[in-house]
Image (tube, rainbow, N blue to C red):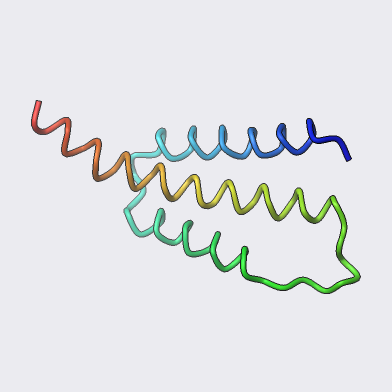
Length: 88
């Protein structure tokens, strides 16, 4: 499998997570924490050996990157950037 495909899949996951987490102001902080927890749970799951392969690696990796990035950017934009806007 081409490394360009892996970079494209992870890049698209980061772009969609960034777009969703900065564009949705109506979500509560607990959705972002839930996204980080879901990413960590997904990262620790042991899949059967029959499922092993590059397609599963790309799919699970993209889901992990999406969920973790969504949660992290959402929490940063909600708490850190909001405090900076209030000070100015």
